[in-house]
Image (cartoon, rainbow, N blue to C red; front, top):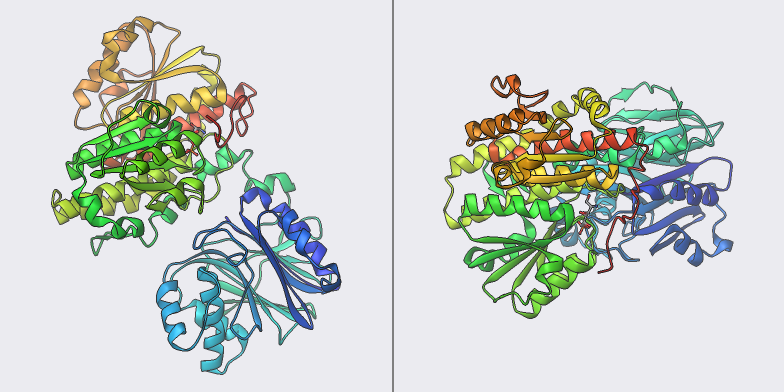
Length: 612
Ligand code: AGP
């Protein structure tokens, strides 16, 4: 996510802002910038790190006691100098920094262009700052009221801070969907995305609530108002935790934070791309090539690790719904086996980092052979994203933990939309059925929240099996890829050997492994093959395996057979991976912690494998 820092007070603003941006580096970003008010509106901004920004700053022009700074995690527009924040309005009087996504920016940009506005970046933020300026002109009103009116016109999520060249004694801040904290100092104020840039100066903070904005004045006064223009009495809170804890959002590790971020991450990945009640799906990259995608003879999905597991779910979904042949390939194998690829193929590359060397090489090979390349990445402007002909970003926000969690669930969410859109284009799904699935997809974040409530129970199970030497994860249908992913999670952070297997495959050999020392995790939420999975559970029980079963809430049958029952909310079978993966992520996390492992940076692993 982007990082926001603002300052107004008696001290030099620039060093406070730069230090604050460095406190926010953990959030992940690709460019940085500052705007300072010192008679002029002085802006420095640059792609790269905050330290890169510092190299271009002219120290002679940084004297100011009010300013704003930003680290950008690109959502609209490549990571480069001109797309870096702050963005200035046409007049140069306003500067804005923004964390979030303005969904209706294109329509607003079109209208502003008609009114003579010109744009120098590809960002939604530059549209917003000019909308504010236009509203103030049209309404002939105060800037804070213009901000309020403008924000009532935008759709999406934002946390913004506005600097006004005409009023160097005031900062304006507002939020909807993205967090913003105001630090209350002695005759000074701080504004930031979280408390980490603030805590060393003051422990007194006000958290802006949804759809609220703040008018912050140099004289020490401030006001909190709703976008409905109702004044709110601010609730000052005292910061109790360390900077390190703040960076992790109050969680002990990034991985746990990212497991808990999945509901919001899925909402962000779906935002503006589907509407269940109106029955539409809009995947930008997809629509651009919809003919080639609709006429494709075959889909090849290539990825590595967790992303490959998302791809396997994609195979099941696309064949199930769109009735098109799909092959899922490990990128490292695909690139060297001289595969048959034609211009009638669509190759879908899935990659959180967008920099995985094998996946990048695989799509370069496919591109040479005229296939259409569709990228599903989390990092805007990454190599795989730029190499693909088209694609969709997962908008999961930076994933810091090496073990992929929210990237997996947002990849699966996007692949679900792709499969549905393909099925709609090919006429292989009834509109009513598509809407049913879309409605349930909208419910998934809430159901994940509900599943996360099982954390304490899962921690208890982890304490029982933390010293196991081996684990088996078994699933059928859509839960088979989840079994693979659950096993990978455990392996990579707890260093316990674990294998994922199709449940029915046990009798072809692996069942010889079962004894009283073998914990077996069953994913048993399938309704279509329920009786089959029950018999698989019985096979394991008969050999004294310890059974940890993930079942639909209210399951009665497996309850009798399992040693531990994890009851999750029921959902459409096609969407079950989004729910059943959550207990497995938590199980792996807790076991790894109990074994004293470094869950965020496991041994031997890198977040992005940019080498072969
Ligand atoms: C998953 O937890 C691992 N971090 C790893 O398998 C990862 O999924 C794989 O390296 C692919 O990375 P990518 O999604 O960035 O391409």
